[in-house]
Image (tube, rainbow, N blue to C red):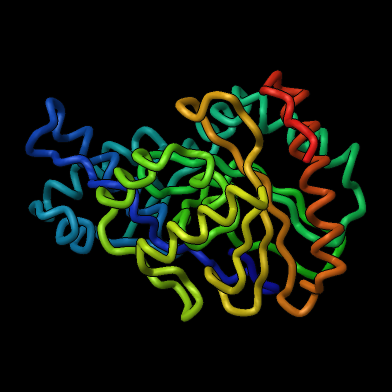
Length: 279
């Protein structure tokens, strides 16, 4: 989920079925939302022909929707294609400003882990097997994450994703796996079978933390844990520390586990979430 360069590291997340415009009471709105999702997945402009092909609609219809989004500043025109507009950023900022846990995350990082070399991230488990990254604080080390705030990744290959899944009841986990279908293999080390995932989640439940050992991106190592909560039916949050694989010595990982415990404990306390019990 990270790189030493600024190349995009987005991995498509299997998180349930996309909305079906044919079954929507407002199909134009549903298609507009789908177009915004598609533009978010591309770093370069996407033309109306490609949008129409992926949506299964006429090119003219895709163009009309894009023009409406253009007038709302939700997209901008770049050559013959479209990209997300500046209004999306202001909406995202307004959304994040309303999430107390995001500001609390930055506070506890500044107060309790100001000089760690690893990059810390806060994420939440959405529907299905999708993890959304809410906040990021770069470490003092050489790694700079390219997975931007708001990026989605598959939970089964990420440290926080697996840590949060381990907090769910088994019937909930099984339901999410059935809905997601085949698990993606982003690297040769990714867990791509449900049986292997179940075994790893059981181990994570016992040890309290999870790792992404080059499962999302070769050369990168991530250790994460869930922020404790007594009600998994509400939002689940996770904190992770990411480093180069070469830096993931056992000695350093022991330090990281202690730092994660401190961050999670203070984040939970600051947000009024159930205080974690000492291990």
